Structures are given as structure tokens and as C-alpha cells.
Image (cartoon, rainbow, N blue to C red; front, side, top):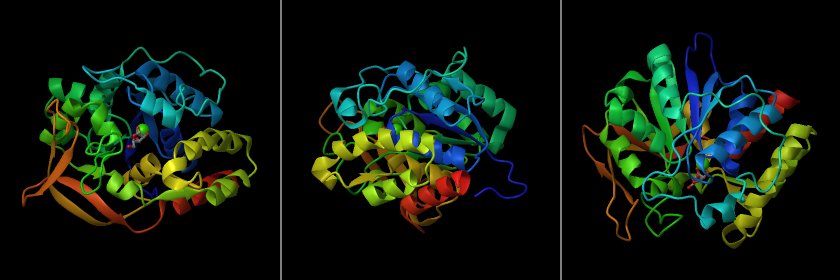
Length: 314
Ligand code: RIB
Ligand code: CA
């Protein structure tokens, strides 16, 4: 929700990616003041992610929002077949969108983040729905960055459930555990994790998809077509009937449309060993813990997503 006097601006650092695309559509539909979109290697490489973001912004007639190219594969990480099996080789479920308008800005995502932090300070709120490589790059040069921006909300981590790329690690963390470790070791005004412990309980059914299709908008028909691939990718787990709203939920928590009901504040650690537990996230309850790991929220993300799209495109 945006309210009078709300001076917040938002930056989406993403790896589109089908659920990233849903998160972007949601943020645009609610007219979130989005001062930029960055890309990071994860579901696809950073260059492809930036092009996908530009194409999605063109689809929703928001080519005015600048897109920057982030860090490509960090040391040891790579875009693998698992990601392609969930998001398609092109990251958008194999759906080919018209090319993005204008050229991607010359400023990299880390440089863009540094510049936006100088411009907006604690008005800037970062939504990270991909690996944390870009943020780690910023923090490495500027350890106080997290204290100067308003907040960061991360879609990532698996704390009391198995991981989704290994038995211990969630995809965004597993793609670059070293980056995630630096992020959680840094000071932040406010750092919130929306982990798969929660996101796998926020599902988007085929009926929900039909409700979006029934809004009878060409942009949304294309979005639903992109999403079709995700249903098939989750055939084993959800029988092709549901998809998890990982990134849209993190975005909805970040902007406040979905309100945190229960959470744990503590210190998060990320396993960076090269063993089987690489990328595992652990939460230790500490009284001075500065990281919030969300456990429950006040409403279903699917309802918020559909209502937001309908309100904008009705
Ligand atoms: O584990 C889910 C996360 O990994 C989501 O951000 C999805 O887009 C993938 O990047
Ligand atoms: Ca993502």
C-alpha cells in the first residue's frame, strides 16, 4: 500500500525468472515508485536477466524505468540446468517477448545501487529476489551501505525446511553463498528474509491464473503464458496445479501490502564451506539480532496479487 507522505522508493534486484516476472508485474500494477531494476546471475545470466527485465517493462509500458546489468556468475556459481528446468532457457518460460527499448544503462547494478543510495538515502528500499552478488559487491567497497538505505527485503533462505536446490540450500543463497554471508554479516537499517519456509505456503492455483486471464488484458495473457512453464516445472511437487509465489511474496512484504504477523529476529549465518551444506542458512536467536526472518503473514499473496492486477487493469 502506498499512503500520502510515503516517500519510499524501491529498487528490484532480480534474476527474471518467472516468479521475478510476477513480482515485477505486481510492483508495476500497484504503481510502486520503482527507481530501477537490476539483474543478477541466478535463473539466467545477468545479461539475459537484464534483457528479460527490459522486455517485461516494455510489455507493461514502463520502459521509462531504468534497467542495469549486474554481476554475472560470481566465483564458483553458474546458471545451471536446474534453473532452466524451472524458468526455461530464456528465463521466461520460453515465451519470446519483443526486445527491450533503449539500451541498458551503462551503469552496472552495483554502481546504480551506490548512486541511488547517495540520492535517496533511507528513502531507498531494496527488494532482492535473486542471488545477493550485487549487494555483496556494494558492501565490499562500502560496508556502511546497509545502514544508509531504508531496508532490504530478501527472498531467500531455508531455515526449518529442506532447501530447494540441495537438501540444505535455497536457490538464491546457493547461487552465491559468499555474497549472502557478507550481506548477513553487514549492518543494515532493516534486513528481512522471506524464506522458502514461508513462500512454499503461498501458492498460485490454476484457478488464480484463470482469474488473471479473465481480466482480458493482452499483457496479462502474456504473463499467464510465461507462468504456464512454471506449473509444468512444479508437476512433481504440485501436480501442475500450483506454483509458489516466492518473489511476489517478498515484494508484497517489502511494500507492506502483506503484513508480517510472526517473525524471528536474530543472527543469520550462511555456510560457505565447499561441502554438502554449502549455502545452508541458520538462524540463531540473539537479543541483539538485527535480521528479521518472517514466519507468517496476515494474508495470502495470491489474493493480493490478483486484486492488485485487477485494480490496475480493470
Ligand atoms: O528459491 C526461490 C528463488 O530462486 C526465487 O527467487 C526464484 O526466482 C529463484 O531465483
Ligand atoms: Ca528470483
